[in-house]
Amino acid sequence: MSKVLNAGQAFLKPATEAQTTSDNATALPARMPAISDTPTDIRVMKPSQTRTQTEPDGRTEQQTALLPQDTSTPGQTAVTETTTRARLSPEQLNNLMISALALLAGIAVWHWATAQNLNFYINFENVPSPGKVFVAFTEHLRTEVFYVHIGVSMRRILISYCLAVLVGVFIGLLMGRIPFVRAFVMPYIEIVRPIPAVAWIPLAILMWPTEEASIIYITYLGALFPIVINTMHGVEQTPEVLVRAAKSLGASSFNIFWHIVLPAALPSIAAGLAIGMGVSWFSLLAGEIISGQYGIGYFTWNAYSLINYQDIVVGMLVIGFLGTLSTLFVKSLTRPFLRWQEKAR
Amino acid sequence: MVEALARSPTCGDVPNAPALSGTVDIENVSVVFGEGDKQHQAVTQTSLTIKAGEFVCILGPSGCGKSTLLNTVAGYVQPTVGQVLLDGVKVVKPGPDRGMVFQQYSLLPWKTVSENIAFGPRMAGKSRDESSALANTFLALVGLSKFSDRYPAELSGGMQQRVGIARALANYPSVLLMDEPFGALDSQTRLMMQENLLSIWTEFGTTVLFVTHDVDEAIFLADRVLVMSASPGQIIGDLEIPLQRPRAPEISADPVYIEKRTQCLSLIRKESLRAFEEQNS
Image (tube, rainbow over all chains, first blue to last red; front, top):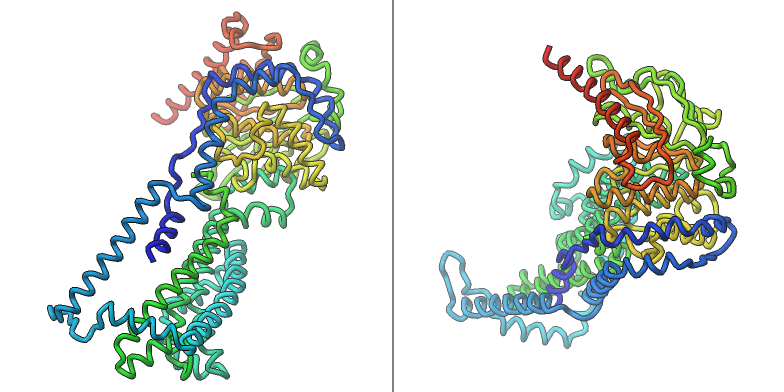
C-alpha cells in the first residue's frame, strides 16, 4: 500500500532541481570564431546532402568552452530518469517511509478504537477490527467467487473507461477548437455533470436494455466529464505564439493540430484521464447496486444487506486499492508522452 | 552595394536563396484594431522599401506599432489599408518564405532541439532524413550541435533563441523577421547574440527586419535604422548606418556610431516629449 501511495507521490513531485543552464558570458565568446570560421558548412548545405559536417578547428574550441554547461545537464537528466524509472532517491525513500508509517498509524488507531469499543459521537462498536477484516479478506482470497466479483468489476471499468476516453477526448478536442461546438455542448455538460451516479440508477434501468448496459453507462458517465473538461481546457491553453511559429514554418491546419494543439493539451488530457479513472470507480459502485449477481460494488452492498460487517470493509478497501492501482496504470501509460515536461521543470 | 560585397561573398551560393530575393515593399500600410470608440490606430500610412539582403532595424518605444508593422510582413496581421509585397507578391498569410523569431521562447517544448529545427523542412514535405540532416547543419551554424537531442527547457534563454534562429533559417526564408528576439536576455548574452546574428547573416545574406526598442542594438546591427513613433504609429526617421562590417562591440566608440546614436535618441526624445505633452494637455 505504502509503495503504491509513494509511487503516486513520485509522479506528482516536482522535479528536484530546475535546470538552469546559465548562458554566462564566459561560455559564449569562444563560439564566435567558430561561427565565422565555418563558411564551408553553409556552402555544403544542400538539402539533399546528408550530415557532412567538416569540423574545423574552431568547433572543437567552442565545444570545450561549452563543456562545463554540457556536463552538468546530462548528470541531472540521468538523475531524473533513474528516479522516474527504477531506483528511488533518498528523498523518495523518505517519503515512502512517511507514507508507510502513516498507514500503520491509521491501522493502529482503527485497531485501538475497535478494541475499546469507542463510542464518542462516532460509534465503533459495530466496526470490525483490522484483524477481523484481514482474516475475512484472506478467506475470500481462497474462494473463486471473490475473483469473479473483481474480474467482473474490472471488465466493466475497462469497457466504460475506454468508451469515456474515446468519446471524451474527441468531444473535448472539438469543444476546445470549435467555438460553436463548445457553445452547443457546454450547457449539457454543466447540467448533467453535477448529477451523482446514484441518481442515475432509476433512469439507467429504464433506459438500457440490460443491467450490464446500465451499469456500464453509469460508470462511463462518471469518467466522461473530467476527461471532456480537461481535454477542452488543455486545447484552449495552447500558447498562441507556438501556433504562430508553426504557421510561419509552413504548417497546415492539420499539422498545427497534430504537432502543436494536441501535444500542448496532453498534460491536461493526461490529468483528465487519471481523474476520470478515479471517478469511474466510485460511479461503478453506484452502478453495481443495480446488479443482482457480481461485481465488487455488489459484493459490498450485499455484505451490508447480510449484516456482514467485515465484508463491507473488505469490499471498500478492495475498491480503494483497485482504484489506486488503475489510476497509477493510466498515469504510467500517459507518462512517456509527457517526458518533455519532466525536463521542463 | 559596396557593403553587400564586403558583407557576403558567399551569399549567392546559398541554395534556394537566389540573390536579390527578399525585397520587401510596404505600401501605404495602415492597421486599425478594434471598432467604434475603442478603435486604435497601430500603424498609420507607412510606406517603405527594404532592399534584398539589407539589415533593417525598426526602433521605437513599446506600443509604437513596430511589432504590428512586422506582423503585417509576417502575415499575422492584415493591413486595414495598403499592402505588403515580398518580391512583388502580396503577403496574405504567414509562410515559410518569411522566417520568424519571436521575443518569447517559441520552440515546441515537446520536440527536441533537432526536431524543432527539422519541423519547417518536414512541413515543406522533405523526408525525415533530409530534414534531420538540415537540422544538423543549422544547429552547427548556431554552434549548438551538441544539444540536438535536448528539449528546449534544458537550454538557457540565449541558446533557445539561437535554436529559434536556426529553425527560422532552416526553411531558407528570403526574409528573416525578428521581433525583439533578444529582449528577454541579460545584457552580456545579448551582446554575444548580436555578434552571433551578424555573423550568421554575413553567411546567409538574407534580408533581416529586426524590431527593437534598444538604440544601441539597432545601430550595432543595422544597415538602416527606421525610428518609429507611437500614436499614430509612423516612421519618423530613416537613418543609414554607414559603419563598416564586420562590426565588433568596440564600434560603439566610433564617431559615426555616436553621431547616429545621438540622432536616434533626439528623435525618440522629441517624440516622447510630444507624447508627454499630449497626455498632460
